[in-house]
Image (cartoon, rainbow, N blue to C red; front, side, top):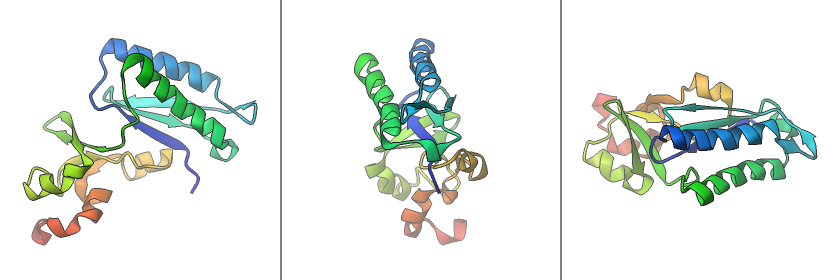
Length: 160
């Protein structure tokens, strides 16, 4: 499968002014996204003022440089505005209506301490397509995520 969506997660929800900065940068990027010198269609959407999804409906037309240019936009946002969406060392979950970031290296401890269970709502930022965003779905129970597969032995088999 060819990737047609990229997920960028900020550690915390953005304020309205921060959101404006990111949207302005992404508006400029998607309206001028090029691959091999040719314009390529792009769009973005975001959830919870924290997760940004960049989508290209023609991923076969993308070059490595055009994908790198997307990364450069987020590097510029980080450098100029101290807003980091490039750190993939975090796992995100919904905790009573509030999104919490958990360092991936602490996942095992959180599961063992019963702070995460198979019913915890999590966000799957490893999706590769817009279709997956809606079919998996992106926001789901931990039992349907890569975390459950990796740490399956830590979950009580009776409860899932």
